[in-house]
Image (cartoon, rainbow, N blue to C red; front, side, top):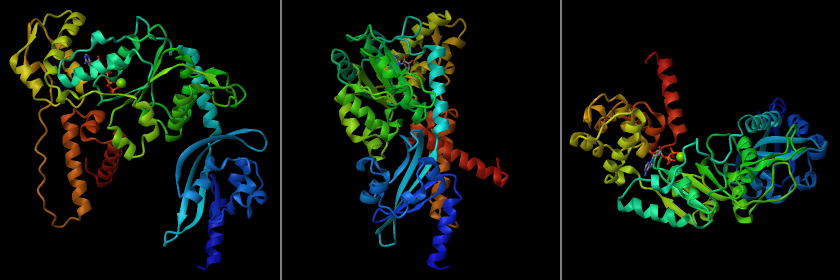
Length: 469
Ligand SMILES: Nc1ncnc2c1ncn2[C@@H]1O[C@H](COP(=O)(O)OP(=O)(O)OP(=O)(O)O)[C@@H](O)[C@H]1O
Ligand SMILES: [Mg+2]
């Protein structure tokens, strides 16, 4: 095929897509601008095609244009949501991905932007937010009914743990942001609440939001609120920052927050005011932020999941709660305090753990940390009858991991096949040891839950296709 024919093919291809496509060449001149993009932005193709980008779009600040970022700094942007007014003054929300295109010599030849109109989804998500706010009034300050944790509830005497605990107690008196790092179940929420209720803010709200629980557009609306008129159908609604005014806002799994939103959060931390989505007013806020991470911050920064600048801003006070396996001294005293708790709850009278039960607990490595220990004791107490000593048999603890030595035999397989088979074996064993619990398994193996789910799905569909089980 000749170059001209390729060009025609590309044009036809772009025209047939429902997504908007905008391509600029290395000089910043638009060479492709398809109908879908034109409909989205309400700009005639002729106004854009063959024009330099800066001429066609004079109102977009240079550092906010993802196309220019791709062109000048070769930065790709994936799935960034943008909200803007199109030429008819209609607010449009799109999800854009932009990539620099390099030729075989590594020279930049073009930048491509692909945009998907999600205005309807956005409207829907705003409606959900409003309904959530109306129906539950769920973001009330924690009151007597909901479990409220205090420093006096925290059990532990090992040195590495009490060091962190003392730092947390000292931190309570200030208003500085706090970053709590610890594996799942180490007590991050317990620490966050204890700090709040020990601080001058205790009579103001303590609100918590898990950043991994919601898609980007919902999370942003929930945190910052929305202003009337901005969005199609959006009402004036307070975000969590405003609702938590004077109090504390716990942002769980902050690394799950999209990158762009992380920088918005950083700005809030620096300037102490927020602006509702679609609003024009700066609203001063006084909220203490406590953020948590389940994984090592350095690794999250390296993987591009946590912004370095945000990390430095948050870690003014950094509390790193050690996993239970690094403070086994605490296992027996925690177990005893949970015995107490569940004796009362289930009206049982188990006075102590047998030596063998203690030993069984001490030789386990607790990937789910204190929460896992609490669950073992809770079920054991719930199922007990009249005995006063908890025996090792009532502790439903998985056996130690099977020896994972895999013989190195590469005959008849490629390296990739060998690695995959080994990986599969490790994952299956870990899954079995964690009773099929995906989160625990991912945690133990040091991989993301989503990654593990993806692998399992892939293997499952492969095995189904092969007729295996
Ligand atoms: N030091 C401790 N003393 C007493 N109870 C504890 C301690 N640490 C954790 N717990 C208990 O373990 C459970 C889990 O704690 P928490 O919810 O604070 O963990 P987390 O670190 O926030 O976990 P995740 O990352 O999964 O959200 C809670 O029921 C809490 O009461
Ligand atoms: Mg938590």
